[in-house]
Image 1 (cartoon, rainbow, N blue to C red):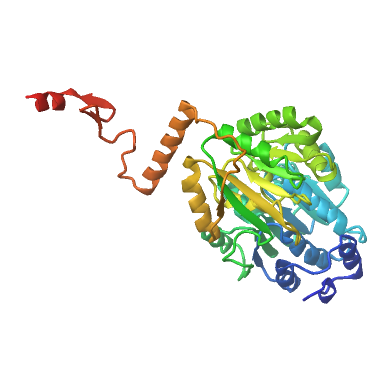
Image 2: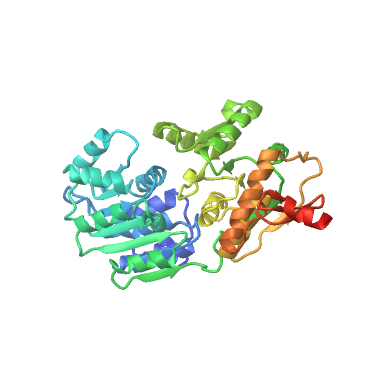
Length: 435
């Protein structure tokens, strides 16, 4: 199907799609929309940035057709507040020529306005699991009319932090319903869990052997330490093609330090920092500004922003730190190269990251190009504590692969004619040699 007109969508939805500038359905949309319209359960797996949200929203909006009663008929579960807002924004655009009503509820802020929105009567509800249960148990949400259950970023919704909430939700929604699971990655364990509540689901797996978007170029820089990483950032950002850049860090502390440094160098108007310690409103404002403010070049964040967020025209993603949850690499670089546009991903790799980047390459089933560090980038000496921490991390990695590995700090070494055993000097062996 080469056009949205080929689907059995009504004129109101087609007009909304046209206003958004969508012309050709993506691969996941081509395959998922007819199956969802046919009433079957679906497991949809596709690269991030390929239009999965519209792949389930368009057919559900067509099936709901018009406003009816006051209780939600479709429930869309999402793992994060940011993704809740994104799905809500998509609904705002797609429903503007219809009378369909929706509400978005999530934690981290007061529930008063969310309760009011639900109470006015809705056809669709977008919710994080925790806030949904809070409102349901308080009597603000009726579930008996729900016909469609969607899990967006399904793999995360079924991990340890959400699985108990998810099972509780399954107990309170009608058994007779259509289930839709969408994600960029889907483990065998998740598929097994899905099999417990889905009826003969159709699995739609787009390009399963290529886990990262083809529109994103990927390179690796090998660097000795954090200070050299910062020197490389400064060198790269002199290039004006780095117009909209997301810098991913592994911890909130590193994100704060890098963000504050960049605020000093590039000015407060050009940098925003978001992570779990920031208030919900601060994070929402930062995301909105990064989308709309042309002056704002840099967003410094943790993996909080790696999943499901649709920020147009991101030119580059920089992995200041290599993610140790390897699927997050796929989600991170998917923030660029979206909707048929091209983008670039640059990953900074220290000696302690070599193990992780190898595992990432195994996951995505492709080799990431290594590029030479530009000559103008000053390479600084690694401080003692940072070097020791990297050595300890390398030991942990080797131990993970080989439980019998005793570690570099425990191997026997000859030091000035004396034998060192487990960090202690064996003087007895030295005396025996003298005799």
